[in-house]
Image 1 (spheres, helix red, strand yellow):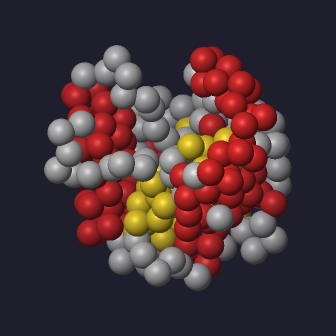
Image 2: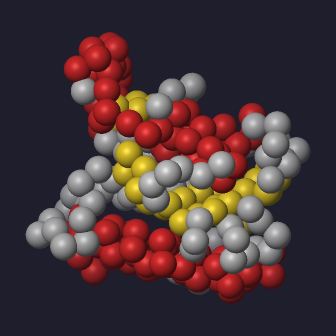
Image 3: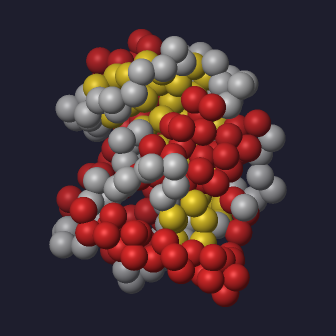
Length: 214
């Protein structure tokens, strides 16, 4: 299986990339990112792009893949709708459209979030809901992953400093959270394994929650 990972340097992407490199049935991984991953692995190839809204320069290399795990995302805090839409809609659709044309049977997993709703009054929820719908319309094997709280594992760190502080503070509480609200808690490695499951066998539902990722 050959896999493309977008956002491999982010918190979720790091966890997903790790699981892909560990999986025996994954023979190659293309990480499309704005900054190098810093990893060296025989399975891993990197495409560094300054503008993720334009994949023209690498389009010739996007054929022959079985799955795309789209993990690039950003917090909506402090962002207006136009800026947030560029990252959470324009970027993933710029990836999805050529991939659907070049690899129509590809499994495309878009990392969304719990509470996503295209009809929501919340800007982030509405934007991501629109992206979910269009990706699932493009790909028969398209999925929207809606994790709730994600605990970083195996050394994964967020690019956002205060996130790392928050995760460090909540780490001792994770066992309690898993007992109290198990359907809303997952880990970066569990998300990665769930994406591989989507590519291998699929899920009954195209919207996948934290509970489904266990």
